[in-house]
Every structure is written in structure tokens, then in C-alpha cells.
Image (cartoon, rainbow, N blue to C red; front, side, top):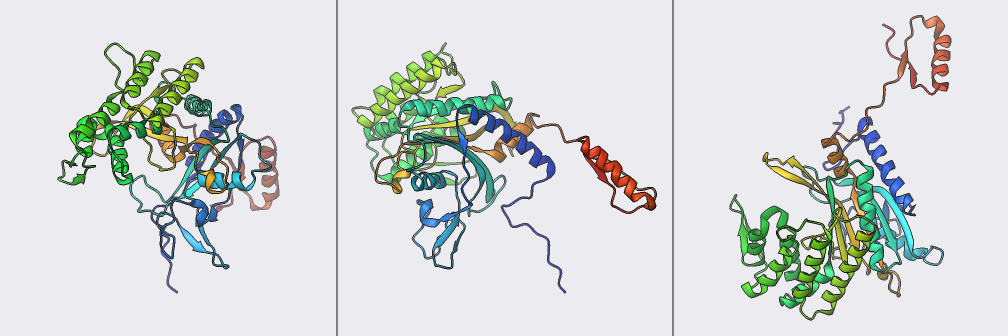
Length: 416
């Protein structure tokens, strides 16, 4: 008979005892912070009906773009969950009558992406989310940012991270002032702003205009904006840079940035609401003693289309070497924001929601780089078999050790 080659599908990985122990220890510390803030666990299944996952449904007979899908025996399409937020929206809507309002929960588990795998990009990975559903005020967003900071401190990352905060409404106001109207252009502008860390202000300027050519000669088409349209967007991106003598993340820096943003939104009501929300969030953050750990950064845009207000990102600020041997900041290990429209797909009444997600593997990799992983578990005491006739005595020795809470095993291998 033909032997089957033992191969793992691309984009998946096996986990070893050391990795499992390290992730387990990290998750216990995160859970302790979430529970201290009054959040309770909930667990949803790996599969949901495909229509529940919403925005990832393409117009094809087989909904497989981005999601792994299969058809049930009653011809209903089901998909492996893509994130932990859409299942939460479904759970809340389905159990609306019985759940407390606001509903505060955390969830941990694997999510699946039917995408091309690459270095550090997996088709199955773990996320750890916390969300407040049913609270519409900026105080719920401020609490998320503070909880993210406390999680980082609990993991021993004090002074090595910032929680960067922005508001999509402010960006909407700036885009309206700049006359960026079509969804396609807006998306291209968002992508350009998101590249600020990578390409700097000049690179963003090129991406807002005709486009940008990189060192390899590859050309990325830009948003095609005029210089007059680019000007307010660049001013917006640069509004987070502190003036000389002003400490980044200080109250003075926050106030100065908010004043600049207020001047860039023109008469936009959406933009004004966003500026007021940011002012409220940072008033609360400052009062609770989180200034400097939670900072205002207008270049944070976050990719997902369902964010409707404040957005935030945890960035680890220590340096690591990239594949080209250059020193770069480690970067984002999680983020989130307000998504007031997601539950409304299931219910008529508006249901506000805010939350964030931690990328478990990425955060674990960061902790490993700075030596923050737990010490390896001590190996078991092995009782060897010197005389086969006394096997029962050896088994009793092992049992005595185990009852004393000592890891122990009887050696079952070759007696030689």
C-alpha cells in the first residue's frame, strides 16, 4: 500500500508544549484584567451561517472569497468564522431579551481566513476580544483604551507600548472638506494614510496624488487628488506631530492636536461630533491617569469598513530587525473601535457597540523577543524499571509522587 506523506496544509501550524504553555500563561493574565473591568466570557461556535458573517459574502454560488465555506444537508451555506465580532453581534441579537444592557463580554478562539498564506500570515490564528454592546457614549471607548493599556502593563510591557486613538468621523469631515466623495477614492485615501509609518509624509503625498514607485520599480496607483485636495489631508496627517518643546502624549499635545483637527473639518457636523468625542475620551483618559500611555494619533485609520467612530490600536514601540536587517518598531498587536452598525443587521433598533481584538500569536512573538515568556515547565520525575518482577512497586512509587503533586511517569520504553 502507498504511504501517505505526513504534511500539514499551507497556512496552518502545529503547536508544541512550550508554545501552548506560553500562550496559556499570557491568556490568563489578559483574562484577569478583563474580569477586573467587569467583563464575562462567552463562547460561540467555529461555524456560523455565511449570511451572518455579512460583508465577506461575494456574489458567487460558492461563498469562498476570504472565508472557508461548506453547504449543510439542507443546502444552507455555513462558514468558519472570520473574526469574533460578527458572531458576537449574532449572539447579542439572538439573545437580546435576556442579556444585560450594556452587555460586556470577552471571547477567545481561533478564526479562519481563506487567503494566500505567507511569512507570518496564517489561515488559522487566535484572537482575544473584549466588547461592550449597548453603550453609545465616548466613556465606553475610553474604557476600552484604558483596558488595553492595563493588559499591556499586566504582561510586563510598561513603557514599551502606546494605545493610539483617532476617530473616523473626524477623517470623514476632513475628506468632505477636501471634496473626496466616492467610496473608491475614500478607500484609496485611507490606505495612503495607513502607510505613513512605512513611507513617511512624502510617500503619503504621492499615494494621494498620481501614485508611488518603490525601490523595486513597482508602481502603486494613487487616489488622483489635486494639490488643493491633498493639502488638508496632509495637514490632518501631520496634526499629530507635537510642536517643539511639547511632549508627545501630554495634555498640551492632545489639546493642540484637537484644535488643529477642529480647524480642518470645515462645517462638517460629522467631523465636529468626532472632535467632541475625542475631547471627551482624552478628558476621561487624563482623569484616570493614563496620559502618555493612551495618545491621540490622526494617522490611525484601521482597515475594516464597519468602524463608525473612535478607532484605536496598540503599538509596541521597541525596535526589532525586519527581513532587510533594518531597525523598525515592532508595531501593532491589536486594535478595534466603535461599530454602531453591526448589530443593526439583525435588529431594527440601533445598537451601539465598541470593542477591540488582540492578535494572540503576534503578541506572543513580541513577548518572546524581549524575554517575557514563562520559564519552561520542569520535566517529570522518571521512575525506571530495573526489575520487571517489581513493576507493581515501581507503579506505587510513581503514584506516591503524583499524590504529592510532583510530575512523574513510569518509564515505558525499552528496558535496556
